[in-house]
Structure formats: C-alpha cells, structure tokens
Image (cartoon, rainbow, N blue to C red):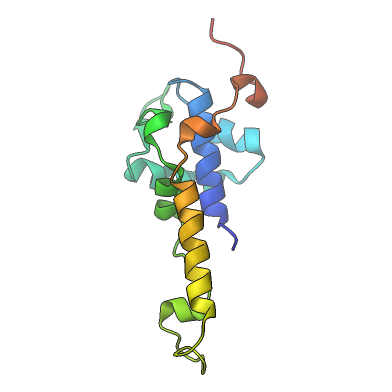
Length: 142
C-alpha cells in the first residue's frame, strides 16, 4: 500500500502550519520549505480549506492557518479526505475479472490488515506529529 502524494503533501502542510503556532503560512514558503510543486500544493491547500482543516485569510498579508487545534485533527480523518480509496486489490471493488473471488481468502486477510492500519492511524492526531519550529528553519516568536 502506498499513500498518494496528495495525502503526503496534505500531512506536510498541516505539520508546517502546526509548527507556525497560529501564524499564517503561505503556499510559496511551504513549497520552498519542502521543495515541492507550488501548483500541486495550491490544490492540496484548497482541498484542506474546503474540508475545514485550514482557514484562508485573503489580502496582501493573508495566508493559511490551522482551522482547528492540532489535537482535533485526526490523521485518519486527513487520509480519508485525501485518499481516493483504500481498494488494495480489485476484489475490494466487487472482484470483477477474478475467477477465484467467491472462494478467495486473500480478500479477508487484506481487509483485516487495512482495518488494522486505519485503526492505528485513527489513534493519532496532528499534535502527535508536531515538530519543533526550528526543524523548519522557523525562528522563535519574539
């Protein structure tokens, strides 16, 4: 199983915003910090804002900030918002084309593994992933 870049970037943006401790971030500075595509990050931030995880402030001195406390943003919630699906194999989607689907035991094993993955992820919040702002090159607030 591999998470999409969209999920990866979503988590990175949220971690960066959390490190800023309420101060506004910009897409440009976040893209520079992580050395990732500004265009892709714009889509990610728009999605996170629509989902209510980020809040956008318009204007010359605008930017983005967390819309909730880090302890209120579940990692499982983020992944469910950003992953297109958790279909590990085609039989999760009805088994079309698989001749052994009606008797196959693999589907049950993979479903159990996916359930365990999600249960583990659901135990963590953004607060558990927070890093010291210095890791991002952010100077302490004056």
